[in-house]
Structure formats: C-alpha cells, structure tokens
Image (cartoon, rainbow, N blue to C red; front, side, top):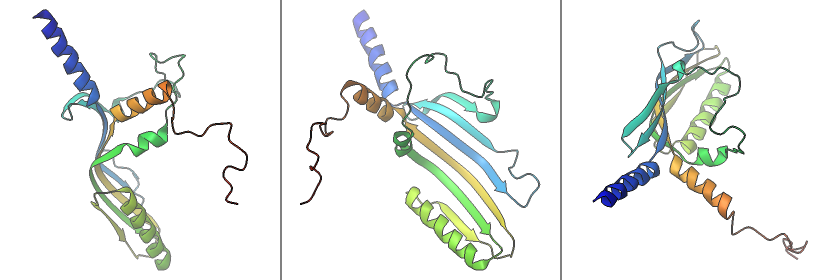
Length: 187
C-alpha cells in the first residue's frame, strides 16, 4: 500500500511538471503619446506559473517585483553554464487571448497609410487568431494610441526537453566535419 501511495505521488509530480506553463497576462495596458502620462498607471502585468493548464501556483505582478541589482541574480544557478535560446522560447509562445487596438497618425497621409499597412501585415503573420485592429487617423499630427489586453503562455516542457536533447545527443542530422570542400557545389 505504501509503494502504491509513493507511485501515485511520483506520477502526479511527473504529470504536473509535464504540464507546467509560464504565462504573462496583460490587462488594460494603454500607450497614448498625446497625453502627459504616456502609459496609464492602472495597467496590470502578471507573470504566473500554471500546472495542469488551470492551477496558477505562482502569480506575481511585475510592479511588485524589485530587482536589487542591474543583473538578475539567480542564486540556484550561480556559477552554472546557463544559455537561454531565445529563438526557441519565442517559437513556443502561445497567444491564449489578445485584444489589440492601435491608432496611428502621422503628418503625411500617404506615410500613415503605408505604416498602417506594414503594421497590419506584420500582425497578421504573427497573430494566428486575429483579434486586433489597426486604425489610421488622418489628422495631420504624429501620434500613436495602443490598447492591449492579452495572455501569452510558454510551454516550458518543450524547452526543457529540447535542452535535454541538446545536452545528451545534440543534433543527429548534423553534417560531419570531414566532408569535401566541394560538397555543396552544383557542378
């Protein structure tokens, strides 16, 4: 009976680690270049860890986090070789929810149209679930207004598994170093 209890606890921990996610929740974030306060004070940006895709085990407001030094000191990983592959982390970002409203105006109407087209096309490529709008304002003055409510999550399991794979075996499809110098030529 005792071993069954230990087995269930270990199984529970494995499933919890497998479903862990890091999330960033942004609420009521507004940028307005026409006001004296460029960024509103009542916005909230929370960072949280969740397990089983529902239970938030750590929820912290960014305004409450105080960094004492300019460098973020992680005491557990001190004197360890920690290399974060940001490209891989960015590829694993999931957009759970996004409500984005951008209003842009420049002094030149043609420039406003071009900028709005570029921003809308970039957002269309980046955001798979389109819930955004880019509105041109032809008022003859330069300004930008952004309103953002969103939830971004990163599944840490993918990143952890990729780091273990790199440490243990590396890339098995990698080319050997003893190839001929003309191997890539098409003659």
